[in-house]
Image (cartoon, rainbow, N blue to C red; front, side, top):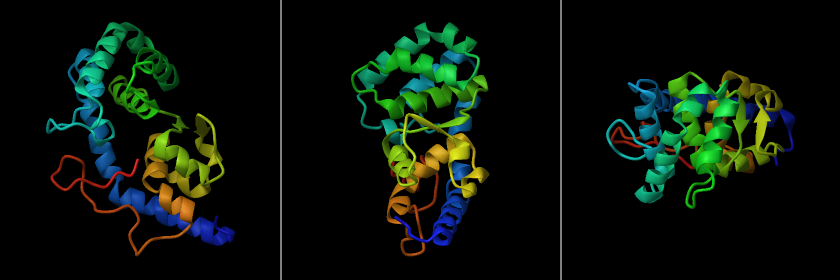
Length: 204
């Protein structure tokens, strides 16, 4: 825990600035890849298979057997009409969760990632922060718990980020948030986008 409020706020400002400098562009490029898919069928395929533009798999789903991802894709393709009719990201997320959340090998992080990718294609973005895996640990360091939190619940420094960016940021910087200190002048490891040949370190 960080005892001094000013030191806390200074740390939050540094973390958010570091995220914007070293991670925002990479995260945006990764998610915009799904925005450019030619059809919902293609978007679902790429989202469920966790594909990157270079053919590699997204790091979060790298260890999931392809057979599991194939099942997830099949379920989502069958539900494509319902996904397309979702009014907002919250409804889309619930639909995706209902379709693939019960599949053995698919956890909450994968449900969120797949919903986020499909939502990008459909023009539906998260407006609250979903907590899972490392993101949950980062939020807990701020005294926040639950399945999701409003962006207004976070310290003011995080207002510079979107809900999706906050989800990413809390995960990447969970160790710094838990320890309350900056490590050796760098927070989240090497720069560079996933799939660029110099993968950025993702601690989620």
